[in-house]
Image (cartoon, rainbow, N blue to C red; front, side):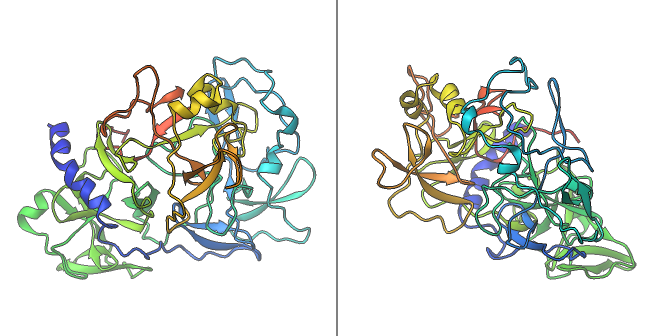
Length: 455
């Protein structure tokens, strides 16, 4: 019954997602708490993660939380920086079935962890402020930390607001490997609420991750949901002593009963949501999930289509669009999913090591000459298909391709008659190691409609 209802509603949802960026103004940005911070740091807006902490040059700050892999842990624990100047020349054997001690690709030019992730050093006279602390590095230098997590910047970030080094996105962004996370500033929301990064935007939820919604039938700071409406919807109540905070207000919906409103719209829980972080309530006419800010839409010519897993990005012909994901198995867990990294990983899973076959099996999504996305999340770059590395327009055979987060995107032509043929096909989903998450291809999912997550 659940699947049937989703199938019946998905077309309307897909239309709403592509027909304009919902009912929210395109320029709305998430507000954050202005907590004390040391000189030289700031909060800058990003298109994907919302407000992020940055250094004086606007470079996003990152942390590297320790994660358990199949054969051990990698990353950092609070208070102990582990990103070193030493070049890791062999793999660590943390991910079966590969034993440790194998030489890394392009080892002679492999960068160290600190080359890719420059530590945020603290001056000798720097003083801790609030959650901002100072740690001693193994090399004897001082490093800034937040909540005792050592802080770094990413060489992939080129301008303020870039978060190309990592993400905290839900829905298929959880690559296997020990990922770096941008240091997202605390959202300025009442304590009952939290904010989650999704492909659609920064999703507003309760602290227990149940989604909240607004209704078109309400007025500003006034609820019209009573009687039968309350059979399916529960107002999110505010305490008697609640005061306005940022874009939040509370109002009296009944004598002695107050309800929260965001940007003037009363908020509710959907009592029939089957899982946390749900978008199901927005399938009901005139009800909407709430976003503190919206993710920029894909460039003109892309589509958002229905598939068996939910709403997925397609190209101008409707073919599924894939991202390539890769994290290597050295102790420093460097990303290998971008054109500046060794391409042997990608060539192996897409063409058995043959770059020409790779391009045939997973063609780049070609960008028209002069194409612009209008945002920084999507862009274009020239690629040399023989090397997989960035090129220029003058490079013989170079292709001008679309990128997502400065990584090329692809379709799946397949081989031996096995490939995506119709818009509903996504045969390369999970293509590669560990369902495509460790080293492989994954579709760009906007809504994982049919899967459930633990509550």
